[in-house]
Every structure is written in structure tokens, then in C-alpha cells.
Picture 1 (spheres, rainbow, N blue to C red):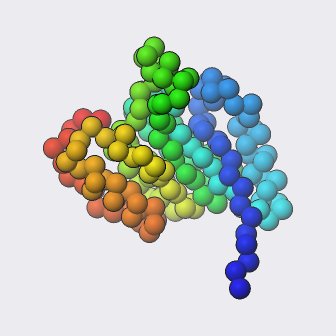
Picture 2: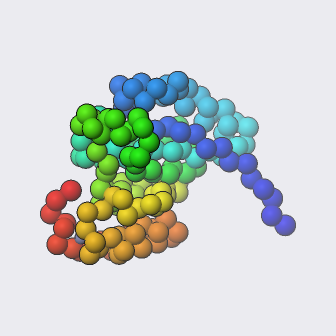
Length: 170
Ligand SMILES: [Zn+2]
């Protein structure tokens, strides 16, 4: 018999305090920690949504802050993290993009963050691969990279890197 287990998803977004505030989340890091602690005390598992490269970040910063956000979420006691590359395509993000405050992240950055998260062995880490083609400029390796992400999601194991001509530049 399957016993359904309740699991609550919480959008942590980022542990960058300034940017968390700019995202207009009415949740502080303190609130997040308290919520996870409360859920754990009541036997309810939680998963955290973490953004890869929210607005106002460069690519490298996006990677570093996503890693730090994963660290934070696991320390707070979540069971699982889901890394979401930030997309354009809604009004607010499009305006930020026009102003130069936002650029969509690269699929390679998502691979780096997923590798990091799985490597921690602190819990499961998944990359959100919905519409993942948006995050690649290279038609040659996009299928391989997508397959790699899906396989790492499923197996929670760091697969061999994809080698491509586009590797030099993120
Ligand atoms: Zn490529």
C-alpha cells in the first residue's frame, strides 16, 4: 500500500537579501527557516524552489547565489531543491530585460548548479527543464545537455560533461 506523504513546496527564490527584497517576496530568510522547521517538526517534508539568475545578477553571480541558496535550503532542513532557470516572457521580466537588468541564464549554468547540488549529497536536487531550449544558443549540444539534465534529475548522479565547441563562453 502506498502511504501518501505530504510535501510542501516553498519558493525560497534566492538567499541574496537585496534581490529577495526586490522580487517583492513578503518572505524573509528567517521566515523560510521557521517554516521549514515547523514543517519538519510536524513530520511534513518540504522542497525549496530556487531561482537560477534572478534579475540584477550577472551569469557568474547567478550560479554562485543559486549554489548558496541550495546550501541554505538544505541547512534549513528541506528534503529537496528544485532549481528554476528564470524565464522571460511575462511583462515584468520583459521590462527588466529591456532595461538591461535581466538576462536569461545559460543551460550550462543550470548544469553547473545541478552538479553542485547533487554533489552535496544533502538531499535530492532537480533542474526544472521545462522549455529548456530557451536557455541555449547552441543547436549542436542542446539535445545532449537536455538529456544530461533529465538523466541527472532521475538518477541523482553527476553524468559525464557534454563537450562542445560552445564550451568556452557562458
Ligand atoms: Zn554547444
